[in-house]
Length: 512
Image (cartoon, rainbow, N blue to C red; front, side):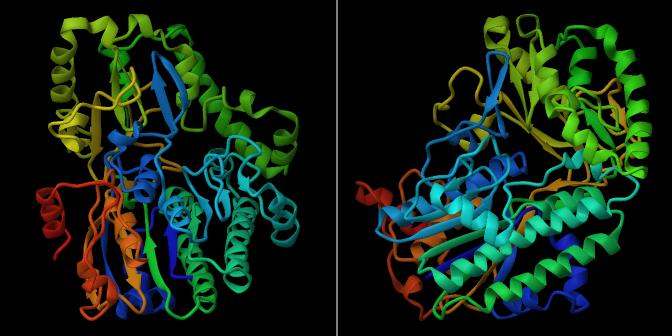
């Protein structure tokens, strides 16, 4: 095997640096001290979707056609999807073998010369390839595609020990499958991703003893994985985004859009019901948890019904918001990290309303801190595809992309209020753009380097000796390789025909 990629969802130096300084993460520390380390700049928005898919394809989210785990077309939500090839596809196309374990955005599982288990969000039974592996991984490693409970309910309970134990068990199954793959299979590329590191940071940021214990566990298991890595393997550790403490409060943009007349929902009279249910939900969750009845509720009450009840913060999710959306009477709605405009309704007023919204939302300040909640708002074609025509189909790409401040959070959920600055359970922290990048191995030099998330796929493929696809937006970062290594001295090769001028420009970008 030539490459191992460890994906740690949401890993951030804000949490890791103090633990590294105290010597509590020896395996990560060794990778950093004997390799190249720095930040990995995430996408706009800095979110699991689209960031992991941008990592694996090397492409901008606007080119992929989505900026969230749900796409939006003509007022309807649908799962985001793309046919863009990913790292493992390129490896297999070149005759190599590859496997991916648990990376978010990878459902359904791809057909590889190797194997794949999909990560969040799992939409059905086709989360594993080949299908013949299912019984083996379930019985041998107690492998499940996800935990059995809705984390945004039970990790808000008073006693989370049982839920945390199940998360630990699920994480362990991923590590065990990776160890099996390293011990028993001959792979050229292996991706292992931990998703629940993200979940822990959302819910336990204010409980450092729980959060730090989780990272120590991850580091210990990482050491066991690294002990099995064959000689000559380059190891990369990446996160899809970082994390930061939330201090502005939660801003509910869809409620603001509704109040300002941009968004129309059915049944506005139910707002009072939402408020009553939110109080009851808190009481009910605590009562069910105290008497150990939560498993019974999971068994008897369908998830589709549970999702209709506001969570303990009084929020309903985007799927429930979509059911109440009157799109033909709305100008705008927020999903994921962007605002979608009703192009058909606005007609010639489209650009006027887009500019108006971009100006207004960037002026919104937190009643808690007085700080703007956003760094900026962007036209996606200007941010990711300057001079190009967007590959959009109806409303699949947001008309406005939003970048919250590192300490700010703009929620696509619906709440009776525009702001929540007091009830932040489960939202003590928020995603931030700076993630982590670590590289170590026979081809890697000891240094520091900051990369864009789009750079990882072309850099990994170049290190493996494969050509880089023209459609990739990232560039090969030859500066992470030691001067005498083969990837440093070899010219970057591109797939497809390129003009000599274009090839020369790319060569300069790649540091030749």
